[in-house]
Image (cartoon, rainbow, N blue to C red; front, side, top):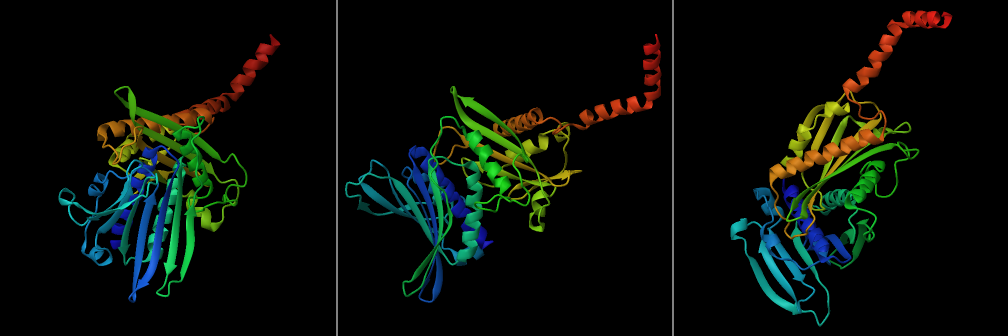
Length: 401
């Protein structure tokens, strides 16, 4: 669909902006503005994605994946306008690129630069215009950036703004999403931030901005949490890291009808790559299928692998839900990100998920017991019941003697 084409480009641009913010090493801002305006009786939606991170390497725009179809040709002409500058540059550079051209033949058109007037700063802004509906785009970007909050990315503040202006110049502004700058902590790791972010996401059912669902989570302690991390080393440095966090939530009160979906026997796996949400990779699907879930008392009925992996469970307790988040990233920041070997990724995914399940099983007595572990105490009690009379007689004669 045309909407998917435009929003997918926006998601890729946001992911690249996050990488530039990370590579700068300094506190940065990512701003996404979706603006609707009327020009000559035509409603146009303008999208601007800007960041204050390191300047663009430009090659990243040549590698953007764009699926062209006839419908998207009506809503968007494929043109991106790029403005970028590095911290050591004396000028601000401007480019145009047409994404409808195939990647090998895609070329950036360089436009006249502008002076920085001796100012010292870096950043990139990418803009595009489309006739897509602003509300649809804004809603899609809101969902995407809400998922990004699960990562609790340090050193980057994020905002999503919707604006409407008419031919008379009047303008209304709506801030759809805004996060404060989080400074890195020496005590907290990326895995701990991911765990904390998923906890917030679960408590808010994934669709709330600030408040915890008081209907389902009346008291704290409703979550069982397990986490695991696996790394691949190259040249004595961690190059690829895979983190997994698994949470079991139990409703502490009668859930309202609007919350019932949150406790269905299904799990949507949140998948992140290089600090950005994305569709699940085959490496993750292979790892999820290879886990021996029955060793943890879980029976996997099906795995749907559309945009997101969705696990469906059998014989799952009522008012209980499992959430899983996976994050695969390079410790050494690169723009565009490095490509990894699928076999290595699958191995690390499986290891991280298994470690998270083992962590859950170890920390919470009685949680994730295998079918065999459950049968052992059952058969022991059955043995005692069947031999109760013999045990009583044995104790009686022992006392008499």
